[in-house]
Image (cartoon, rainbow, N blue to C red; front, side, top):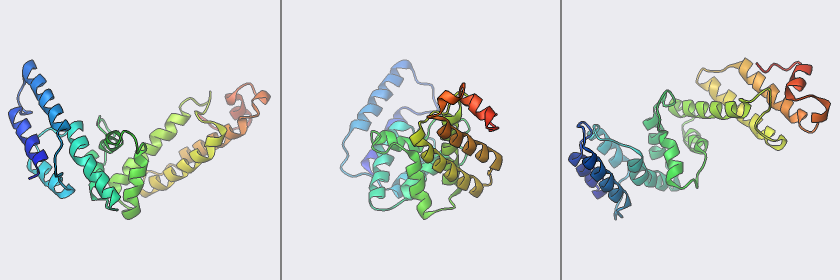
Length: 228
C-alpha cells in the first residue's frame, strides 16, 4: 500500500469517525489531516489502488482533503495519458442522483484541485462521453449541469436574460446539447426546450431595439412569446 494511503488509514484509526471526539481531539485531527495533506510523498497510488483502498476501508471519511491530495493528481496524470478510468470514478463517487441533496460535487473538486486551471466540469463529462457515449452516470451529470446553467441565465425572465447579445449563440448551442442529452436519458421536454429557445432568440432580437418597447416583457407579449 502506498505510504500516503497508509498514513491516511493510521490517522483515521486514531480518530475514528464512529465515535464522538472531544474539542481537543477534533483540533488534533484537523492539524494531523492538514499536515498529511502537505506531506510530499515520493510515490502516489494509481486508480486501482485507490478504489481497492476505499472499498476495503469503506467506513473511513473521504472528504475534500483526500480527493485533492490523492485522487486529483491521479486523474490529472491519467488525463495526460489519454485515460478516463479515474475520471469516470469521480463521476461514480457522485452517483447518478448526486444532485438530490448531496453537498459535495466530486468532479468539481477536480477544478478546485487545479486552482481552476480547469473551470468547467462539463469539459470532464465530455472527456468520458467521448469514449463512453452512453454512460448514464455522466449523462445525468451533464443533464443536471446544463439544466442549472440554462435556468440560471433565464431565471429573471421576463425582466431580462442574464447574457449579452454576443453570448446568445453559445446559449442556444448549450440548449441543443441539453436537448440531445435529455433525450438520451429519457427526460426530453420538447415544450420547455422550445420555450427556452424562443426566449433566447427573443432576447437577442430585443437587444439593440429596446427603445421600441417598454421592457423585455413588453417585447415578449407583443411577439406572443410564451415565457411563463
